[in-house]
Amino acid sequence: MSRVRVHNLSVSLDGFAAGEGQELEAPFGHAGTRLVEWFLHTRAFNEMHGQAGGSSGVDDALAWTWKAGIGAEIMGRNKFGPQRGPWTDEEWKGWWGDNPPFHTPVFVLTHHPRPSLEMEGGTVFHFIDASPKEALRQAREAAGGLDVRIGGGPTTVRQFLAEDLVDHLHVAIVPIVLGRGERLWDGLEGMEQRFQIESVTTPSGTTHLTFSRP
Amino acid sequence: MSRVRVHNLSVSLDGFAAGEGQELEAPFGHAGTRLVEWFLHTRAFNEMHGQAGGSSGVDDALAWTWKAGIGAEIMGRNKFGPQRGPWTDEEWKGWWGDNPPFHTPVFVLTHHPRPSLEMEGGTVFHFIDASPKEALRQAREAAGGLDVRIGGGPTTVRQFLAEDLVDHLHVAIVPIVLGRGERLWDGLEGMEQRFQIESVTTPSGTTHLTFSRP
Image 1 (tube, helix red, strand yellow):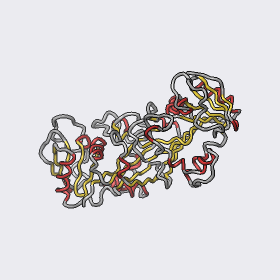
Image 2 (tube, each protein chain N blue to C red):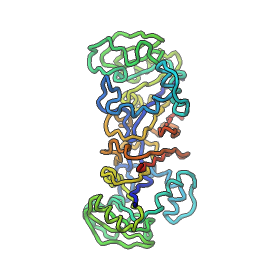
Image 3 (tube, each protein chain N blue to C red):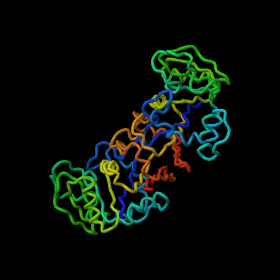
Image 4 (cartoon, each protein chain N blue to C red):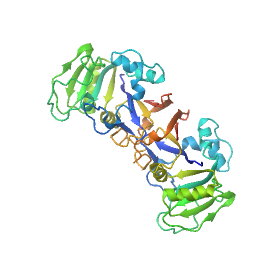
């Protein structure tokens, strides 16, 4: 059975997975890069973006797991780009350039569908107005038996967790107090009881938690 | 210079350091013992309560550090007991029996002062209506050059952190989503910048963070 997975989701000590004020120049809002520093220095991150080098320790090992065995991704519209409401700029093709790092079908959840976008390297963006369950049905079909990744942002992940649709969750706790932004854990009281949890702290100060179905 | 220290403060993934509904039978409210399981199994905890046995690993080592070099404690009234408002029951002498584990002067912050309570083993409870700074002045005087511990609860710790009065903070992140209760981190945006932070995850799944003045 194909699994539904979340990877590399950084969260502050106070439970925020994105800052306040997301915009074109600041995809994480006032958090800047503070939530994702541990990730930016890894080889996995560089490889995703067509570059060489980076660290190859435990942060990197965990970061790589996002890729293996994934056949489709589902993402929220806010991860795709900073526009809100009806699409005013259909030239916008995401943050990632002509060859995005996904290389699979990607289902973008939006109340404003638009034609699919076929990119280089196998990524195809589909824009669908669907519930989590229905989006997952379509993504599973497109994934051809492989796993489906919920790519974020935090609101999208929270919706899938709230409906108990996630089989594997990798969270990176970053020791900062963000103060404001988008909370990951709201409405998820007791969710840890559905999972086996492992934790490890790496020399970057990040604590990685994996939540897996028992 | 004597330092101001916080120890063994357990916090959930969503940032709650106590549950909702604190009362006589449930000092942590709906959280029950879930926030403090890692602590309850240690030798340090047992020794505090006059009992033998317990684990002697990394959780225990960190738990012990609460004790060394402390000359006085400051605690919020909610840590002292479940009563609110004017004291209706002056027979209440805290949760800890005749010989509390502090063995130093303990300053209880309350808007309703009452006579000091001298317990067995050196603990003396003083009830004072004072600001954090003034309470600290009194506690420092009583500590005779040793350190002052801020004993909790979360609201009291947060007040001292907000006024930048804390030199050392030990937090234990417990991988549960509590959903409701008393938040530790509210109003403390960016506080990590004042500290050097170390993190370690133990086999109990707890992640210990120490915040120290550089």
